[in-house]
Length: 131
Image 1 (tube, rainbow, N blue to C red):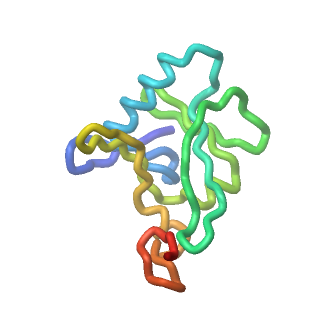
Image 2: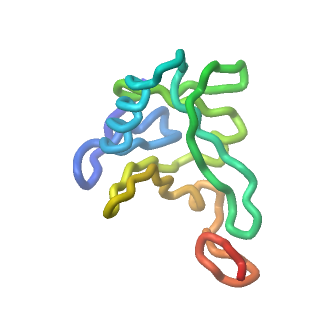
């Protein structure tokens, strides 16, 4: 079940009130899955340990879905997220941003979802990276 939510440049897909995917990110996810050579179930969103900067978020192809995964479906794409990662991703927005020659997926509002500020408590560096 998916619902639509108005965003600044179009409609974002809100997936089961857990993760919001912007139109740009949804189009990119669908394109990646349509070009995948091997059999893939979707795009796996994962969370890895953080250090002072908090958690790191990333994506890879999901070759299989386990009983511990939740599959979140959007228009032409599927996100596969395990239960632990889903707890850290509650309320986040996945966007796709092009800046200059580079382009990447961006996870917005993730620190809000886990009650953090995104600033190192030791040195105050935004996003971590103590010097």
